[in-house]
Amino acid sequence: MSSVIPQGYVILGRIGAAHGLRGEVRIEVRTDDSSRLAAGTVVLTDDPLVGELTIARLREASGKATIAFEQVVDRTDAEAMRGLLILAPGQAEEDAWYPDDLVGLAARGDDERKLGTITAVRAMPAHEVLVLREPSGTHTMVPFVTAIVPIVDVAGGFVVLTPPAGLLADEPVAEDDGDGEDDVDGRGDETSGDEA
Image (tube, rainbow, N blue to C red; front, side, top):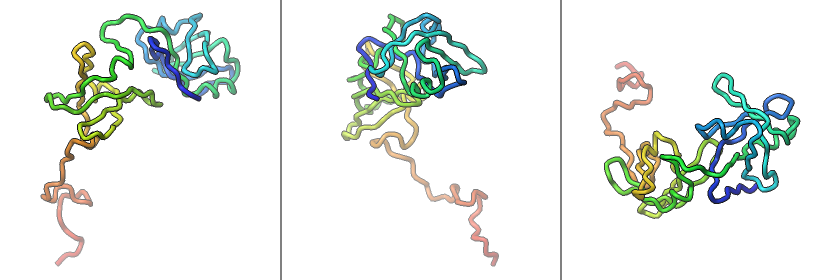
């Protein structure tokens, strides 16, 4: 399957595993406007071979969402849908952006240090990732989650990254200071097991 997201479209959700025998599927909802996934709504998928689908129903239980489409009537069809993105035309929203808006933005740390430039946004199974070209030329995939990308300022031309240690190739990783605190057995002592 080749993924195609038309210009001006946004991701409303990602289809997960089949649920039951009547064509329902789990969906990872990526919109806070549930009316965009209401029964009767026509949405587009990122697979040109599948194209448009009409939502039959959306229900939520125990924090998980399940969706049914009029065109998907059995489990076999539902299983074939796994991984598809559900798309719709974007709406003007405050604090929202299109993936293309992020390409070319400068990336900086929360202490203003330059970390590189965003060269792409990729849809992955768990969440989107920002492709960051670091100053050394290394390309690094940065999970596009609030904990790591707390600020996106399209108008200002930058994103702020707070990457965990070891994520960025150009960032030094703290090394063991040799004080024995990180011993292998976790007991905090330096005995070898041989009593003298």
